[in-house]
Length: 181
Image (cartoon, rainbow, N blue to C red; front, side):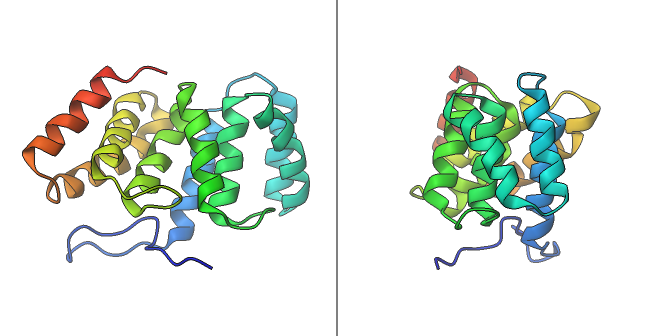
């Protein structure tokens, strides 16, 4: 099994490390909170299965929707691959599904894609791409339900900026500004 840094981490020694599990649960809850009414019944059933720990049923309900192009289901499936729930942990598959979801504009996956690129989980490490996705997550978080996403994204942006050149930050900001689903 690949090893990787925790999903949430501290950029400064003064900040406390947070367990990866909290980040995964928070990300999954954000995905659920941001879900659209498209295929709501099947997505709701998948949520219920997940809450019972019935990963096989959740995957069985999500996979067909994801394969048909449902961005919300793709985001959920990506998270399941990232944490190995109901499927073997597979960072490349997680990145694939999260990218498909984000490409359709489902902003519930933007923060997770920032983590993917920051840690190189299934993709090469790329601070510019990580920054872009964190910026998009921050800019897209406009409802009270998504305030947590904005706060986390802004915190990652602050830490990541200290690891990048001014040119890299400018390029990442340009990519975020120009990004279209």
